[in-house]
Image (cartoon, rainbow, N blue to C red; front, side, top):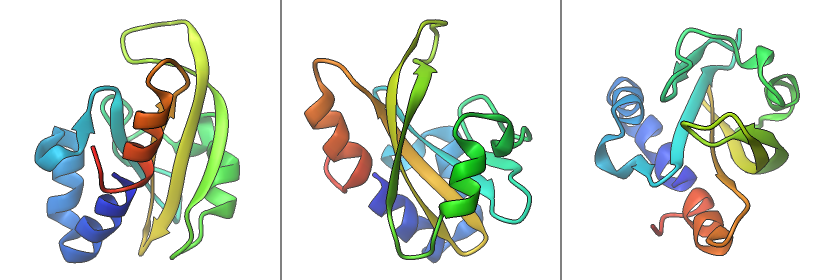
Length: 125
């Protein structure tokens, strides 16, 4: 999915951010979703529930802000609850910088990890 995020942002940033927020065009798949923030200040621009908040206020936001690089996909691991839950689980997020946005797609460890890992990073669902 992150590959498609990069392509969508390069094609039409405004439409891409709207699609990410709405989950349109396949940008929400099970518990996979896109999160983007302004690279300049960390203001979240695409998320299921955190728009307007600051990426620096979330683990591992500060590190992501410092290390996101255009054209390079990085991975970070942290503990975060699934949507609708309060129990933190181990989550992996692939992220990159695209123009003035830092975007990521993550997956939680579990029984479907291999499929979700491939879907988060690549084009396949």
